[in-house]
Image (cartoon, rainbow, N blue to C red; front, side):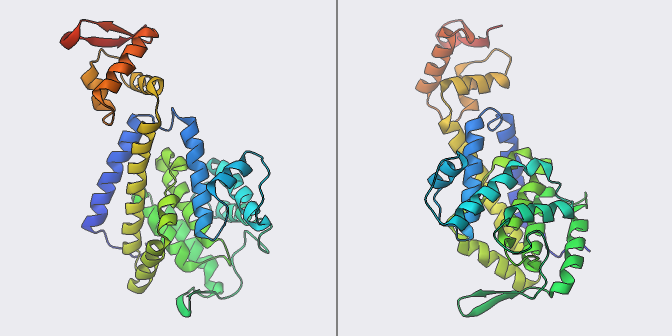
Length: 318
């Protein structure tokens, strides 16, 4: 059965906004042409998803660990980083609709951290916030059947990927199939589902937004629990994704140097162009910066200049 949720106007607007931004990221080859940014974003993903679960290591410490440097910190926290790094480094080998891969990922993620990683729980669990029981998960006997149904839902090709990823994330958290690592697995698997259609999500650290305001994340889960459908959580996660894409676009353009900008522009434009069309591609740069970029590119023999002043055009040197 299809898990319950409603399509609201807010959800439709967010899907439209996200689709436009994905198109802009892809059109500008931002991640493709910037391997440093991709690596930084993957580190942010690991830092944020572990920080949500209480890992005390800083982003700088995690960067050092992944660079094979010695770091002083709790052994458990360091092991969580190494495990997460292995999973995210091999994420392309996992199939989102494959339940065996799901269990395999949990085994890697929680390796040496809990007993029997990669297996569904064999006892009842509840989530307690302070002195209040926030959520009682379904009986452990039902977990294999519920997860099997959820993976059947993932195979529904009529469902929008953006919606499907949010629904899976919520429903998995509701089922709470593991004794530990449910939050990490929910966020990992949403990324994997999105990657099927949009490869850029491998390097989009939307977990950073969740980490900065975890109360909103847990509130969206709680509201959906009370309403008996994932609508509120879908709206929340789509807002997170939309904001993450906005940050990616803004920060990526700012970090590009003049050579990066010229190469990026020429990858997507083989025709003659003007300074105005160059600036319309990079909307955040000033006219002085655009003139300097083009002047340097001419001097380096990357492009050639024709005309003068208002009639000036440029073309990639063949």
